[in-house]
Image (cartoon, rainbow, N blue to C red; front, side):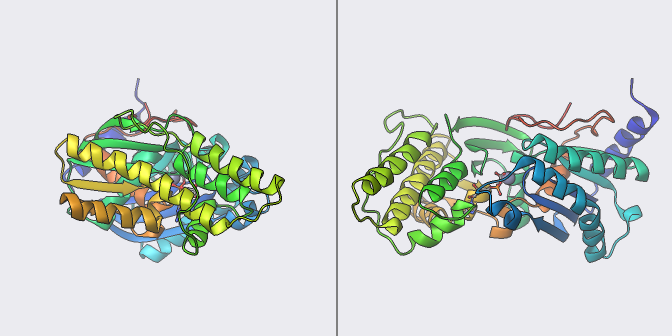
Length: 359
Ligand code: KG4
Ligand code: ZN
C-alpha cells in the first residue's frame, strides 16, 4: 500500500513528465566524491563535487569507512552550495534524485538517507538513479540533441560494458568485462609502477613519454563477441615489471604505461566499433571515468573517421563521478514515466546496467 506521500509523488511526476524545465536536485555519494547538482531540463545550473582523492591517496585506494564518514560531513554543505550557485532555494526544486547503487554500500547510504529526508521534508518526489546509467546520461548534457539509438561504451572503476541504447531507458547489454573493470586495471597497473591513486590520469600522463614497445596479450582476441577481460592484461604487466625488477634489468615505466594504455583502450574501442557495425548504428557514445582518457577519445575519433560514425563523449569533469549526470538520468526517468522511489528505498552495492531504477 502506498502512503499519501508516495501517492502524491507519483501524481507530481505525472505532471512533470511533459515539462521541459523540471528543476532537479541530485545527490551522488557512491564512491569518493560527494556531489550535488541542480539542473533545469538538460541545463546544468550548478554542479558541486567535493573529492576525497587527497584523503584516500595515502592508502593507495578508497577506504570505504573513511569515504562514508567524509560524505556525512560534506553532504549538507555541498547541497547548500549547489542551491546557492544555482540561485535557487529548496522550495524551487521539483524533484530530488539520488544514486542508490552501484557503489560502496556505506557511502551510498549517506546520499540515500540525506536525499530521502530532503525530498520528504519538501513533499517532493525522489528518483532512485542507477549510477552506471547516470554515466551514460552525462552525454545528454554534452550533446543535448543526442538521441537513441546508439552504442555506448561505459568504462569506469567498477564497470566496463558495451550496451545498445534503443530509447532513453531501453538499454541492452551486448558485452562486458569478465573480470576486472578497465579503470580498476588502470589503478592496479599504476600501483605496480609506483604511481598514485587514481591510476588512470597518472598512466595517461606517463604514457605520453613512452612508446608501445612492450608486448602484451590481447585477451579474448578471437571470441568475436563484445566481452572483454582485463585481468590477464593486468597480470601480464605485473609479471613483466616483477621479472625485470627481480633480474635487476632496466626497463622504461613510460613504455609499460604506454603499452598497457594502448592495449586497454584498444580492446574496448574494437568491441564498441564492432557492436556499432553489427547493429548498423552510426553513433558511438563513451561514458564513465575512463572516458576521460585522451588516447581512448583519439582512438574513437580515428575509428569514427574511418567508418563514418559520430562519436560523443562528455567533458572530463562530467566523465568522472558527479551529480549533474544523476540529475540528467532522473530527467530521463521522469520522461519515460518511472515511478518515484518508495519511502523504503535502500542503497544497493550491486546494481546491473539493465536495472532501470530501484523497486
Ligand atoms: O566513473 P568513475 O569516476 O568512478 C566509478 O564509477 O568507478 O571512474 C573512476 C575510474 C578510476 O579507475 C580512474 O583511474 C579512471 O576512472 N580514470 C581514468 C582516467 N581518469 C579517470 N582512466 C584512464 N584515463 C584517465 N584519464
Ligand atoms: Zn562512476
